[in-house]
Amino acid sequence: MNQTVSAKPLSSNLIVLCLAFISGFIIMAIELLGGRILAPYFGSSIYVWGSIITVFMLSLSVGYLIGGRLSLRNPNLVRYGCFFAGAALLMLPLILWSIPIMETLFLAIEDPRYGSLIVSMLLFFLPTAVMGMIAPYSVRLLVIDSNRSGHIAGTLYFVSTLGSALGTLATSFYLVLWFEVTQILVTMCLTLAAAAALAIATGLRAARKNG
Amino acid sequence: MGIAMRPFLSCLFAAALLALVPAAQAQRGELRIVHQERSLYRNILVTEDEERLCMRFTVTELNGLNQSCRFFDDHDKLVFPYAKMVLSSLMIQDNPSSILILGLGGGTLVHTYKTLFPNAKITIVEIDEAVVDVAKKYFDFEETDLIRTEVVDGRVYIKREGLKGTKYDLIILDAFTGEYIPEHLMTAEFLEEVKKLLPENGMLIANTFSTSRLYAAESNTYRQVFGEFFNVRMPGTGNRIIIASMQPLPDRATLEARAPAFNERVARFGMDMTEFPQLLVTKPDWNLRERVLTDEYAPVNLLNN
Image (tube, rainbow over all chains, first blue to last red; front, side, top):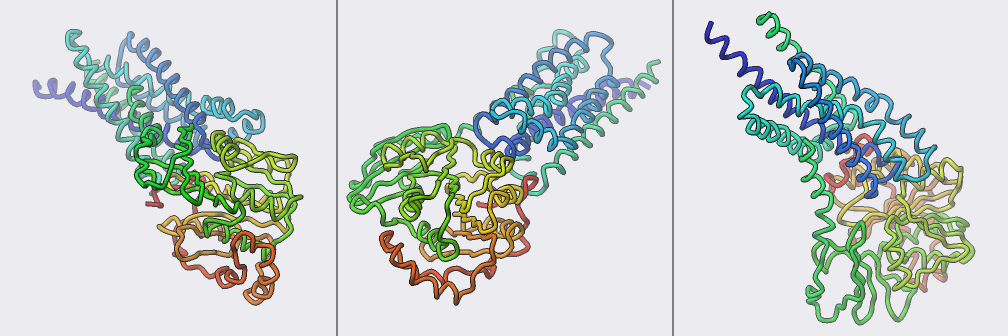
C-alpha cells in the first residue's frame, strides 16, 4: 500500500518531464521545417527566418501567459494532456492546407516580408502557442513545495530546452535527409496525440484512485 | 522553451560571423584586396593581381572560390571554363530576344550575352543588393533600357513571372556558390516553375555541381522535369553545365556541323567552339536511383558533403 502511494507521484512526474521534453523537441523541429515550408513561396531570405522566429517567440510568449493562468485552478494531468491533443489538432492545417494557404497569400501580398509573416501567423501561431502553455503548466504539476519551485522550474526548463536542442539537431542533421517534410510533420502530430493519450490516461487513473 | 531559440539563431548567423576575413590574410604578395564587405548573405571580396580582377564570396580563407573574374587587358576573354561551357549552348539556340539570369556575381555572363546579343532584353535576379553594387562599382556592370536587375529571391521572382505569363527565350541559373546552396532553387517544383517561363523554343542553362551525391540527385531532378539534357563537364573544373531545351536536342553530327560557324562570334571570348560538340553529352554518368529533389525532400547541402 505504502509502495503504490510513493510510486505514483514519481511516475507522473516522470511523465510530465518526458512530455515537456517531447514538446520542446517538436517546437524546434517545426520551426526549422518552417523555413523549408515557406521557401518555395517566399524564398529563404533573412526576413523569412525573421518572420518565422518572430511568430514562434510571439506564440510561445502568449502560450506561457495562458498556460500559467490555467495552472491556477485545479491543475491536473487530464487537462495537461488536452494541451497536447489541442496542439496535435492545431497542427492539422499546417499538414493539410499549407499549400493552398501559401498560394492564396502569395497572390494577395506582393511584399514577401509581410507575406511570410502572415503565413507564419496562420500556420504556426496556434499550435506553438498551445505548446507554449505546456511549460508553465508542467511547473505547476511538478511543484508541491513552494520552496523548491525555482529548482523544479530549472529542471523543467533544462529538460524542455534540451528537447528543443535535440529537436533542432535531429531535424536539421538527419530527419530532412531521411524523410519528407510532411512525413516529419505527421510523425510529430501523432507523437503529440500519443503524448496526450498517455497524460489523459494517467490523469484519469489517478483521479479514479483519489476519488 | 523560448530560450532554446538562441542556439538556433546563432546557427543562422554563424556563417556570417565567420565570414570576417582579416585583410592581413592577403598572404600571397601579388594578390591585393580592393574591396571587402559583409553583406546580409555573405562576405564579398574584390581582389586583384597583375592580370585580373575577381569577386569572391568567402567564408574563412582568402583563397576561397572565385565567383567571377576578368582580365584587365581584355574584358571579353573568359577566365573560367564554365562560362565557355555555357556559351556552347549557342549551338542549340542562338537568337534569344529575352534572357533571364539568376545570380549576378561580377556580371561575366551579362557582359558576354550583351556583347553577343546587343538587342536582347536581359533581366538579372540577384538576392543580394550588395553584389549588384559591387558589380556596378568594380566590374562595369550597368543597367540600361534593356538590362535591368531585380533584387529578390529567385524562386519568388520566377513564381510571380509564371503567374503573369511572362516568357524568356533563355534562362540561366547561376545562383549557386560552393559554400551554401539555396535548396528551394533545386527542386522539381522549382524547375516546373522555370519551365513555365520557357516558350516552345526556350532553353534553360544551369551552372551547378559535378561531385557528391548531389550531382546524381540534381541530374535525376532535371531529367524528370525536362527529359534528356546536355550534361557538359570539363576536366579541371568542378562546374558542370546543364543545357535543357524545350525542343529536341540536336545530335552529335548536327553539333559538329554547326560549331565552326560560331567560331568567329566566340573567338573574342577566347573560345573555340569546335572543342564542344564532343562535350555535349546526354548519356547519364550518375546513379539513376538517387532520389529526385522536391520541395518535400531537398537535403541539398547535406548531400553535397
